[in-house]
Image 1 (tube, rainbow, N blue to C red):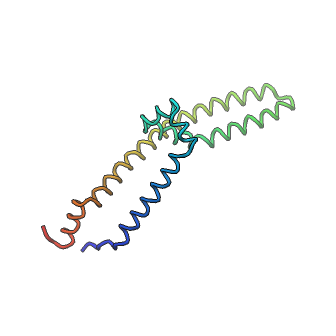
Image 2: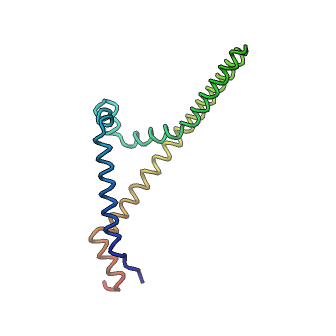
Amino acid sequence: MAKEEPPSTSKDLQELQRKLSLLIESIQNNSKVVAFMKSPVGQYLDRHPFLALTMLVFVAVSAVPVGFFLLLVVLTSLAALVGVILLEGLVISVGGLSLLCVLCGLSFVSVIMSGTIMVSYVMVSSLVNYWFSPRGLLVLNCMSTGKK
């Protein structure tokens, strides 16, 4: 037999929805967000949410390799002060090519992760809408009582 949900679950979900809507509203009312969304780039990304999510994932995943590359540049620049100018050019060139390869791979991973996130979101929201819709609750009640 299926267990019935405690009545507090519905209240908890409503409270969570209220808190999330307040958080989203505070972010949308932020002056920097409003200024960005009025810019051409913000309007373009607003019309293309998959691209916006892909860019967000790409920036988040590429922060570490870019940081390592910048550290490599600073360290080789310090070595150049000692007189290793040719070695610095070689290391920065190899490092730049390596960074290019890593960022190309990360862009592919970002597209895959964004697609997975979007598909998961659609599936979960569909399931939640089905479970908490009047029709879905009717089906669940009929299943728990054994009526057709």
